[in-house]
Image (cartoon, rainbow, N blue to C red; front, side):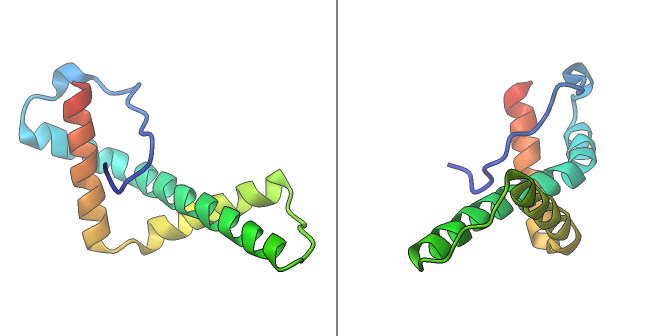
Length: 104
């Protein structure tokens, strides 16, 4: 099981053009920014759910709307994209290459 729990959109990729390792790497670099945001949003969603559970367990009144949750997730996604380490980016890029190979 991968540590990256995100669905990547490969609908606009011409898989016939992916022949060499460089082709896969180039495509992964193109997909990386959106993948970073998706990964950050996934983390944000989990964090949001945990926070809501903690608030509920402590007896606090929940004041969360779907739009607040969405805003939180989007901001977490953008923040993750900006602040991801080079190592995280490299690991995600390698994951994208793996996924591209599986879909080809």
